[in-house]
Amino acid sequence: MFPASFGYFAARSLEEALELLTEYGEDAKLLAGGHSLIPAMKLRLATPRYLIDLGRVPGLSGVRIDGEALAIGALTAHADVASSAIIRQRLPGLADAASVIGDVQVRNRGTIGGSVAHADPAADLPVILTALGASFVLASPSGKRTVAAEDFFIDFYTTALAPNEVLTGIRVPLPPSGAGAAYAKLPHPASGYVVVSAGALIIRQPSGQCASARVALGGMAGRPLRAGATETALQGKALTPQVIAAAAAKAAEGSDPIEDAYASAEYKRQVAAVYARRAIESAAKRAGQKI
Ligand SMILES: Cc1cc2nc3c(=O)[nH]c(=O)nc-3n(C[C@H](O)[C@H](O)[C@H](O)COP(=O)(O)OP(=O)(O)OC[C@H]3O[C@@H](n4cnc5c(N)ncnc54)[C@H](O)[C@@H]3O)c2cc1C
View 1 (cartoon, helix red, strand yellow):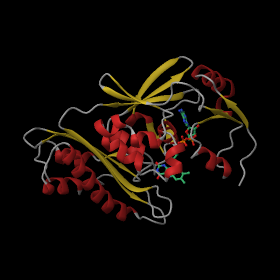
View 2 (tube, helix red, strand yellow):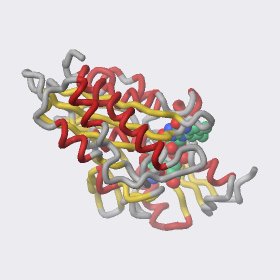
View 3 (cartoon, rainbow, N blue to C red):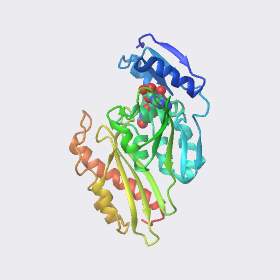
View 4 (cartoon, rainbow, N blue to C red):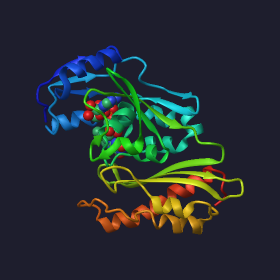
């Protein structure tokens, strides 16, 4: 399988990448790790006339604490997210998700920004980033804007990114003490992509009650879904296994899961409850709850 022929630019700065995007518009595609775009080009599902490679643009990768948030450069590879000492210490749920993406090669080449911009409904990072209340920094020739995850992911492979914008970074609020986050995934046995997954952020009061919960599901719709009924059922309750199981049983409430040859909608509803429970239990344990 060969892609259609295309022109290639290796941008040396963000400004140059933005200039090229402005010049070539929808004829151009940004290239990050290439692990979604190149397969799509080989299958001729994408036929950009020009590729603008971000790989040599300085300042787009790395993880640092910036005030009350973790700032992750868009070009940071999945393997670097998974192994980052800051992430493992402050947001291990995000490291969980990055560490179960594909295989070693995919994790070494694929980037967090590429995963988010591609918005595959079977991807891992959009789910945990939604649970963590992340936001995305988008640069265009007219400046920068920040979009919350829930406004960024619109539908299958569709985001709030405009054709002249580059995703430069991801901001994840640092959870307060007494918080824990986790991610649990049922991978497809052949592809390893998400069949159903769940990300959870639990903030626990010293008394053991749930001060707040954010739970997001993957593989259920064209974008990550918040499990609102589960979150409400946890709010203010003691984080016991019984309470968590009863809340997780509501995970798929109000959803209309996408089906495929491997998983029916009914199967996904059942699996969503199981994986939501696993993610919430792990998050509650990380928040200090004895379960
Ligand atoms: C064999 C295999 C297994 C995989 N398994 C999994 C899995 O289990 N879970 C999972 O989540 N993913 C999986 N992936 C996908 C992988 O995570 C990709 O790396 C990721 O989805 C895309 O990141 P990338 O850096 O490779 O982006 P690219 O392929 O370079 O780009 C993807 C899209 O995003 C756009 N883009 C990239 N960067 C930016 C940016 N900074 N600003 C704006 N637009 C941008 C590109 O123009 C393109 O449209 C797998 C891929 C392969 C090949």
